[in-house]
Amino acid sequence: PAGAEVADEQRVVRSPVAGVVVRVPAQPGQAIATDDLLLVIEAMKMETHVTAARDGRIAAIRVAEGDGVKVGQVLVELD
Image 1 (cartoon, rainbow, N blue to C red):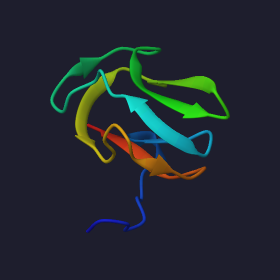
Image 2 (tube, rainbow, N blue to C red):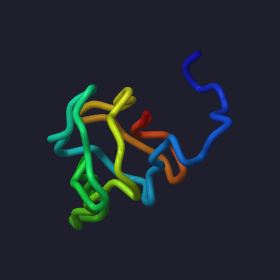
Image 3 (cartoon, rainbow, N blue to C red):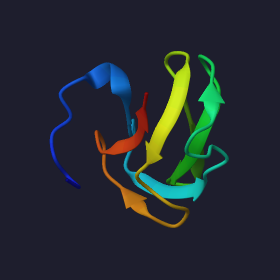
């Protein structure tokens, strides 16, 4: 369910900053490698690039362009 705690932190990417999602180049089902760009968050006129911490596949993207996000919020789920 949405907002539920995720048991395996290796399967999620959390927001490092509070801000607004300005770009989401990644797609569900996409294979990713470590350091691939998943999305971009803007906070105080600075862009923060959120990248993959490991290789895998995107299971779900929990945010869309224009969404406000909080620090620690789950942005992407990985397989």
